[in-house]
Amino acid sequence: MRNIGLETVGDYHALMCQPLGERLAPVTLADAKFSLPFLVSVAIARGRMSVSDFSEAGLRDAQVLDIGRKINLVRDSALDWKLELPPGRVEIVARDGRHWTEEGRPGKCGEPDELG
Picture 1 (cartoon, rainbow, N blue to C red):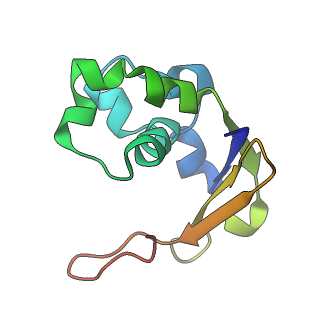
Picture 2: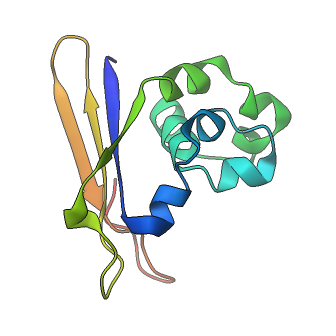
Picture 3: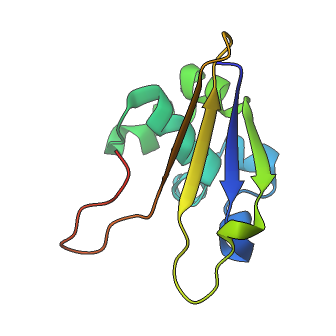
């Protein structure tokens, strides 16, 4: 994996990405739960999330932290928060140039999410 573009959404989501150095390697459970870069890194590394990803060992997982170091924040005003929750977007570029983009909104209670 060459790099990951994680596009932020307005002020709220930008807060979950800043300061980037601290968000890439959170030191507490609370920091990890509110760190978009860490959450994206876990999802890429594992394909899922579990309680163990938020343990002391999970917060120090070398694979997750290595993926996090490849995250770049990209500002996109089209994803700003206006009257409703905007979609989120993750873009991955592999070393060989292959490219993946996922965009969607998280699900609501009783409704499945659009991602995955």
